[in-house]
Image 1 (cartoon, rainbow, N blue to C red):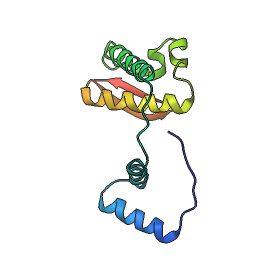
Image 2: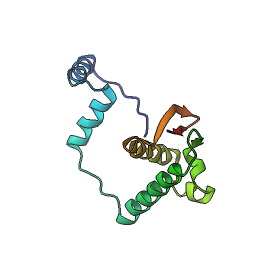
Image 3: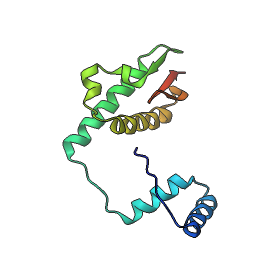
Length: 125
């Protein structure tokens, strides 16, 4: 995910902060939601979606093969050439968030550290 620094009118910022607090979400999530509502949805090409889904399935499968208590870094679940297909650090970070969401729904792996360098570290239950 990219970081953006913007200048914003104080009154508009105050309104956004109050509204995000009322909705009990972070300001980042509030702004993200607002932008998604007004911008058209971008559809990725089918081959890109299939590739990401395939890599996500591999990551989850490989994580679940780890021994209980074994720590691992997401990128180490892949061969170097596989990992490089994700491209930029932004793409890898986004993939990491997808992996985290998928893993958290399975309750087989828990997040230990939010960050170690740029990649999350997980431990199997």
